[in-house]
Amino acid sequence: MINIWGLIYTVLLYEFALWLKKQPHFNFINPNVTAGLILILILYFFKIDYTKYNESACFLTLLLGPATIALGYPLAENIDLLTKNKRAIYSGFLAGTVTALLTCYFLGKIFHSDWQLIVSLMPKSVTTPIAIEISKAIGGIPELTACIVALTGIYGAVFGHKLLKLIRIKSDISIGLAIGAASHVLGTSSCIERNKPKQVVMATLALIIIGIVTSLICILLF
Image (cartoon, rainbow, N blue to C red; front, side, top):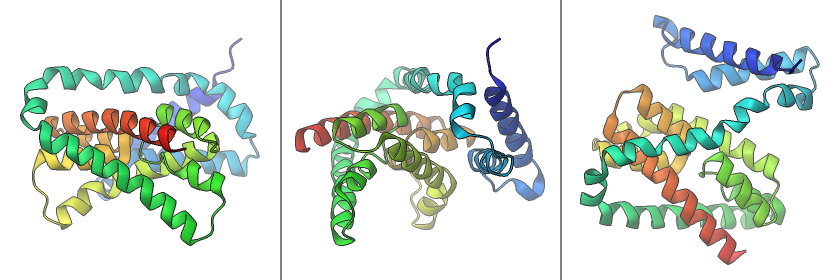
């Protein structure tokens, strides 16, 4: 019999988190954060080995790749929107990628961090499947990279729109590019939840191109 208890628990917890978000007093919370925290507490208090849980929920991990590829659908549906804004889009991607990498590098050096830790943090704004491969290629710790990528995505999903609203960014194109470039798939999911098609398209484009550009720059440099 296939061991899928971890898969079942994870899906049920996420469904509970979605239900909780629909309640009047809890609509500000992010389902990913809620489900993740509850799952961590369950594993900790019931002394459940993470390796065993991961083995039983591995089917969800396998879906990361297809889920990322599926985001290409809104790109095909809105190709005109992409071509009209190509100069701003691609120059922004390059600037954002270089800034993210250099920030990790110099902050790591300032705080005298271990080199392996620095390179593990560099792909933090890239979607998980790509980030793990980048981390392996440049000598990082893939498990640490996966954790940092998840935290970056959660932060962007929870605070990204609020921060952009605070600095009065109103363009859906700009918001989508910023969210997707900084917080990959989880940030993009927050655009989907808000039912903003233009933001979803731009965020999707951003997470794909940022992944490619980051891969090339990291491998060429390191």
